[in-house]
Structure formats: structure tokens, C-alpha cells
Image (cartoon, rainbow, N blue to C red; front, side, top):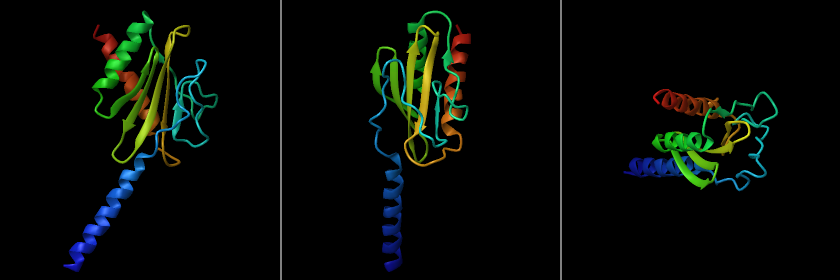
Length: 151
């Protein structure tokens, strides 16, 4: 009986530890003067506005109506089972992106002059994300491109 109780306690502590991997929502996010928050020095962030190669990712390019492109992005994000939109303003979306154990933060900012949507995706916790934020952003890019070719 003691073994069962001990295992239950260990599992409960482990589950609480895993739930703690969500981290707190960052307070420094949100577009300011056409800029998304800078990536930290850790390799668990990508941004189309980053100055350095290790964090830089291409923005989501589009042709045609900027509002239609942004609406398409929103539809793609809403269909993803790992994504929840947590903030929406004209030309700006903030999302939470879930993996098995962690929650990451994503931002999308419409740049009408450039004809692109800037993207930033960063882990809340840890140092390395093993490339997850970059691969997820590229997956979203592919989903948008796939939707555009259907039209």
C-alpha cells in the first residue's frame, strides 16, 4: 500500500512540474511603432525583424490585398489545433502555440508598405527549443501558401 501511495505522490508532483512548464505570459509583447519585441540572446526565438542571422526568419510575403492576406493568416491559425489567438488588433495577432509540455508565444504584424506579415515566435521557458519555433513558423508559411494556391 505504501508503494501505491508513494507512486501516486510522485506522479502528482511530476504532473504539477509539467504543468509549470507553461510559464507566465510575457508582458513585453505587442507591436510598438511597427516593431515586434526583440528576441532574447537565447536560440529559442525567431523574428522577421531580427538583425542577426541566428534569429532572423523571412516575413510572410503576400501579393494583393493586405487585409485579405491577414484574414487568411487568421483562418490558418484558427484551424491549427496547437494555436489559440489571445489578442487581436487591426493588423496584429498574438497567439499561444502549444507543444506537448510547453507554451510558446507568437506574434504577427501586418506591414502594408513591405507587403508582408512580420512574424515572431519564442519559447516562454528554457534556453533551446530544438528549432521548434522556426519549424512551426515555416509550417504556417506553407499552410498559407497552400491556401493561396487553392484560389
